[in-house]
Length: 447
Image (cartoon, rainbow, N blue to C red; front, side, top):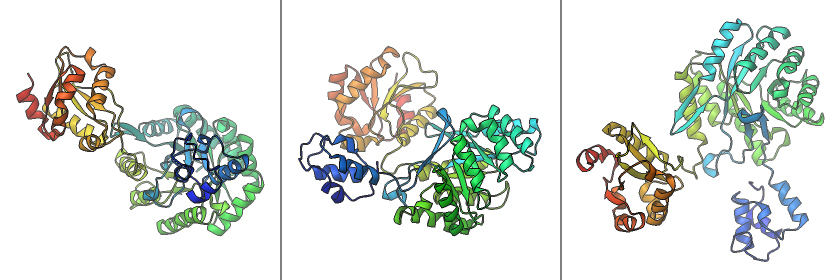
């Protein structure tokens, strides 16, 4: 867990035995790893209780971790530690919520929820999409709001956001769905006592809304004094430039000055459906630094670019996107289909996949686990050794799927051919250097 102390400051609190039992050569090296969040304090068997307490407090992230919902689809937000992704990484991707209104009929409501449930997309081998459904109390009627919440809860597996500053409406809605810990929106300077009571009663996260940062900090302080710490922040700004300024100030105050009132994730609203610039506003909020983004649109053409942008922003720059190392069948691959070796770096795998599909030759692709690195990078780092490849061939099950023992390796790995043949018992064919050459190679070389 990230530390709020430097490596040297942590080192001063360690036993300095250099016992190596933590896996590091020295206590100083362990302290540096701890400060970088690459190890945990429990790896040191001799740390004192006093140091444990001090370092445990320092390890708490400056922005609290908040959970919306329960079960497998629960959404975690917050826990962030940096202003810029390249400093380390952003932790929890912006949770995208799509709205439904309590003014529409039951059939239209179910149809809209169905469209929201389908807002999921396959990107680089993984499925991404929206995370929450936000129910708006446009009617102002508590009974109608609770009815809409009840239907929504039954029709979607996604956690809910309850958008109403009406205490009576929230009471009735929470009576229906409070056990699922929805995000309650929003406590303000006038209703914070009643809303905080409801949030504590249902153990649910609560949005605190202010008219500007000063009022926001004051209301947050009052909610904290009432004993509720599961908070999400809304500065009240809706114009994109003001939202950007407020989002940046909240993040800086939390990380640089450790301002307690701002040490929570935030929520932003991207405007009405079809409003010019809505998608651009939403993209700004994803980058700076919305933990929850509320959208109106159920149009995949509008949501997909935002999901893709979120993936780009929140991908760990220190950890390449990788796919699961296993046997992948392309087309109706049979007992005599070609077997093609590559790495589990997603970009490499999908380049190979696309070219194999383009060749229209049913095949098997074996992406070896290289920690998500490309072919030449993995080879240079020793992650594509013949021993590792041979072991993967034996373990992955490909020998049960084909009658032959012929393996195609990337041209850049030609140097591994003889050793790999010796260890695996397979005939190794050296393929093209680039996957774009696979169609002609399969046509000319594979019989």
